[in-house]
Amino acid sequence: MQLNAKIMHNRHVRLEPLAEDHRAALQSACAADLSVWRDLYPHSMAPEHFDAGWSRMMAQAAEGSWIPHAVIVQERCIGMTSYIGPDPINASVEIGGTYYHPDQRGGLVNPAAKRLMLEHAFGAGARRVQLNVDAINLRSRAAVLKLGAVQEGILRQNRVVWTGRVRDTVVFSILADEWPAVRTRLDGRLEEV
Image (cartoon, rainbow, N blue to C red; front, side, top):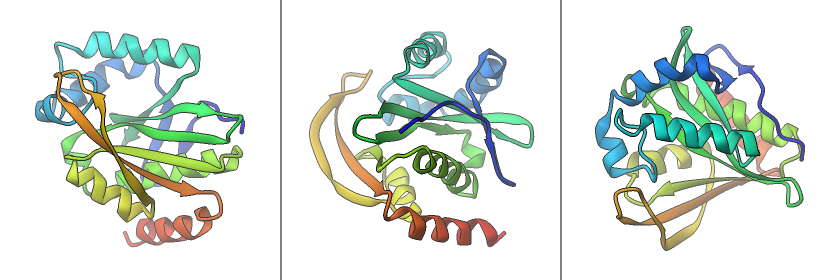
């Protein structure tokens, strides 16, 4: 598996390797829903934590443990999504660290962005793509299932989030041999509009 940061696009979204020129727009998007940072994410990107979160992401990108992308809709950065922990030896990667401005949720942005990320990962040789969701995040759990991922189980009390809450994590995956059917399903959803 040879996974790298690259520009990816379809008619709904464009994903660009996260860079300094995305910073201000991403900060604005992250400030649009403060409750998710308090309640659902392991790290905060709320205004008072944004600079530290940005520095952490850029350091992880530099070391190769994260491959973050800006999510662009109509020439505006409305969020982010990342490849996490690419493991070339086991041909495995997680897609996560995803956040969208609230006015972009529930529509085509997430399936369009995931379609691009999954295509790139499997095209780069991934055998397995994993998606991890906080167990209390029912909206994201439903969205991942709607993508066509398989729920594998729940890791109980496996992570302490920035607020000190101990979270359970729901693990989902899509395997390379499942990807053609998932891709067809996603393409059908994206063609409906």
